[in-house]
Structures are given as C-alpha cells and as structure tokens.
Amino acid sequence: QNAENVEYRGELGALAEQLGVSVDFRLDISDAERAALFQTALCVVYTPDKEHFGIVPLEAMFAGTPVLAVKSGGPLETVKDG
Image 1 (cartoon, one colour):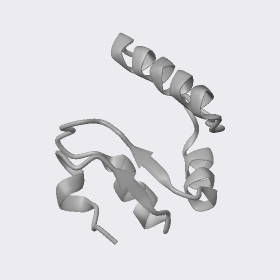
Image 2: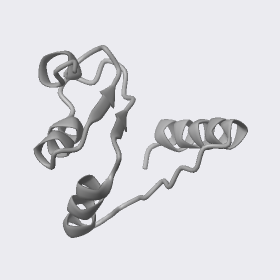
Image 3: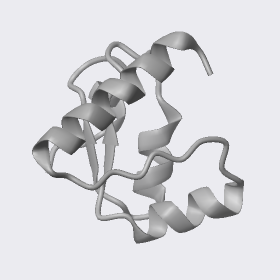
Image 4: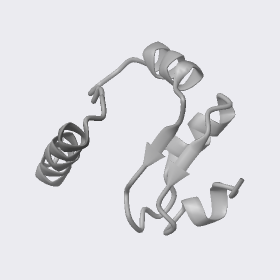
C-alpha cells in the first residue's frame, strides 16, 4: 500500500462518515472474493484521476455491475455512459 492510497482511503472514510454513508473498504482480497463482490455490488465507484487504463471498471462491467467513474484517463475509453 502506498502512502497516497492510505491517505485517500482515510479521506474517503471520513467523508462517508460525515455523509452517513456506509462504506466497506477491503484490502488484499482473493480472486473469489473479488468476483463475489462484483456480482453482488450495487455499483463500483472508480476514483483514480488520470489512470492510464484501469482494470477494475472492466472487471465490474464484465460481472454486470454498473460503474461510476471519473471522467479522465482509461475510463473515458472503457466506460460507456448510460
């Protein structure tokens, strides 16, 4: 885990708490757990700005899970609006 990710996760956790939103951050999950989470999630929120590709949105869409992504980097080419 790099320091920036840890800091950002803390900021997101604080914001979720402030807004009264329940968020479950999971680290180092197995492939089976990832697949189960994608298949049962209401949506996947993808926040990395200017990420050159980003496999997470593709994995989520493959599982049939809607994706809410930043409008920059890889998601501009891989996540279809609507």
